[in-house]
Image 1: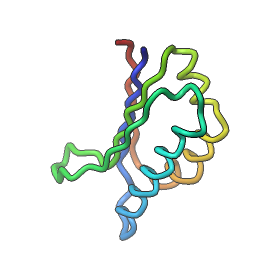
Image 2: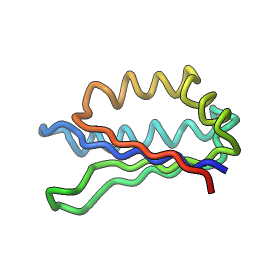
Image 3: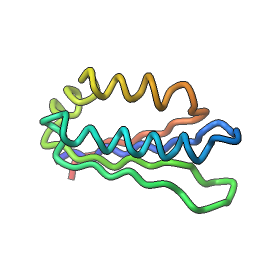
Length: 98
């Protein structure tokens, strides 16, 4: 099994909370659209320290190949292009087997 974790910091602005909620909603909707996606959870941060990020994605796949398929899937790419990349100032990722 593969766990894929991504955390983002959203660029500051008056619509920062709405942007985080849109990321959450659209990523979670991928569960029913991408067959290789075993599970997905998206959380919105409430911690206000300097070290905190705004959104976390935790997703599970059966194999590295399934993770690669997910990353190249048109639905996944569309969410990134429309809801994430234009509004995020920082991204961190970790993938591991368990």
